[in-house]
Length: 376
Ligand SMILES: Cc1cc2nc3c(=O)[nH]c(=O)nc-3n(C[C@H](O)[C@H](O)[C@H](O)COP(=O)(O)OP(=O)(O)OC[C@H]3O[C@@H](n4cnc5c(N)ncnc54)[C@H](O)[C@@H]3O)c2cc1C
Image (cartoon, rainbow, N blue to C red; front, side, top):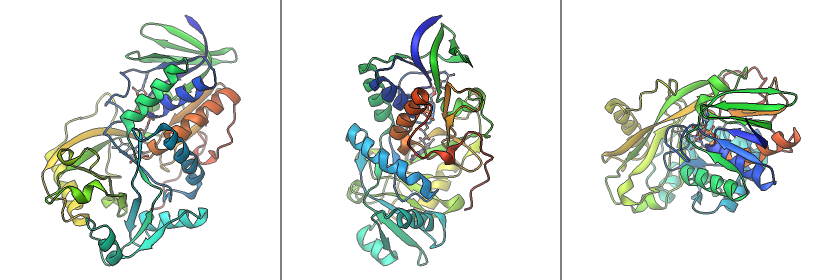
């Protein structure tokens, strides 16, 4: 048994690496454990880019967290975060446009509403339908997930955290005297435990909110014309429901293609049984939809890869104190939209693990709620 830690962080991916950093920078003795190597491609935090936006269509309650995350992203720097502006397109009453407008208006966020003609003039890659509108905001961009996890882990280690990779936790227990985590090579004890195991949460977290692990595919497609319009391009969400796509500028230059993917087209899976091979039909379906939004995005698929969402019925996070243990904190169920929050989630997890409370508004993410499906 190895003792003497203040906090063990179980899972050092997007959220756990941020938690390890925020705990260590507060002078606490931190042990971070991960089943794989640092910043790996077998969980939910890989694929080069993640959308960050502020006019949040999912719920205006996310906005204060996004504003704090904005500051923290800028502290992490340009290796981790790139500002591009964001465009959210759809039917006036739909989620992508209407929900974004609701958040922008409720929080007084700077934004512009654009019709199809104005979008075509300012952002010529897009082809809106005549009945669609777009909300443009300057305070949007993309995070680089691998660079962010690497940076948070390096900052955590520099502040004294001990990080152990390739060491899966087999079980954990908690009681009034502290927490214990058992791995294949050792048993570790601490005052508190942060559970941030991503797609392994359904088997490890022990919270009542149901979570479904979903297989999601990211695609990179080559444009038919010059790459130039794609180099200076906003991040975007286009459409609603099953046809909703999101994407990025050409973050890896001319040879890398342009990443565009369906937002909500996952199929249930588990980390142990997932099919990591992308089927030709999946790439073809995505390209057909991408062509509707971007007539010039019609070259070959450059690559595709699989990733996990861990989705709750209401698509809101599970973030708070564990329902059964005061000294355990859970961060899971990020439902395919958590990465943009990673720095502020790290701060919240450190608050909860050390003080039992946080100044940040997290009532929406209560691990004891009974979630209802989102209204789309
Ligand atoms: C295709 C795709 C696109 C996305 N796009 C966006 C986007 O544009 N914007 C956005 O904000 N979000 C986006 N997301 C969501 C976001 O990436 C996730 O919400 C976020 O990465 C989740 O981080 P995590 O820390 O929960 O999981 P992970 O980063 O997967 O970390 C969990 C870690 O726990 C470790 N672990 C698991 N079990 C154990 C164990 N027993 N012992 C030790 N370690 C363990 C794993 O190895 C892993 O490193 C997207 C997700 C996907 C899949």
